[in-house]
Image (cartoon, rainbow, N blue to C red; front, side):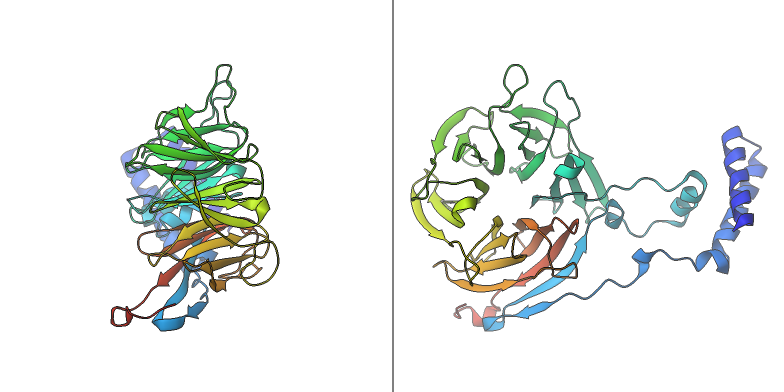
Length: 376
């Protein structure tokens, strides 16, 4: 209202120009009374509404999959802002909170932080809900090793963050606090070694980094400094051959690769020898059209995002489809162009819902202890 607006303008003026302590105290008290008045307090933001309830899948043997929540804003990391913080916002203006623009990939680290790449924002979001902290990291230097299109993210045993950049042709490395460390694949003159680096996985124990070069139809294996030790694959549709490989995942002794335009997921050993594949082109159950992010739960089930169908398919060790979840839409448990996927140690499943500009969180609950002998 007009009275409040004029009062706040006076507050701004006096705070900028300074004033006697007794004047400043009176000002703050006046603002506090205005904020506590019924007319002001009745204007609640939409974030305060109860979150929607998502779907729950009851599965064989007592297992179940539950939708928990979604998030897309920096502000959601610390939703309960203090009275004095709100007071400062009224006087100085609410800060510009960051949000997901065009998220693509997601991973988690040992601290429970959720790390999301965002080509649309040219950077990486770090959501720390446990500590109620948020950080955005990027590399702005245009002349030398600047980020252009961050694609996939991974972490090592020390929570260092590795980000492939599909346009720069490099892998950017940041420490656990988000400080830039180095660029893997940076050549003299600023060019990148990789044609289009996409998927990335880090094996800290073996001191190896696995990087898919989508346009070369190869996987490069490097040491931790980026020196190439091995190349895996070639163009084709046969075993250990690729047609636009994208996401990578290390699972035990397996190297799991999304072979996007062969419409399958290939499972290799760490040396690159073929073991088996899952999926084929089609729109039937267990078939794939646009395979994207992949991950494994605690029972070894393989999850594959299909960006075209807007679902996540779940397979067993033999490659048989167990079930799927999701459909096209913008409600809880629905997707529009889903991409990255990550499953943490507690079987929380994070799915990047790109077009809806959010990450959705599900929880898989496996076999109850009394039913360990059961099968799914």
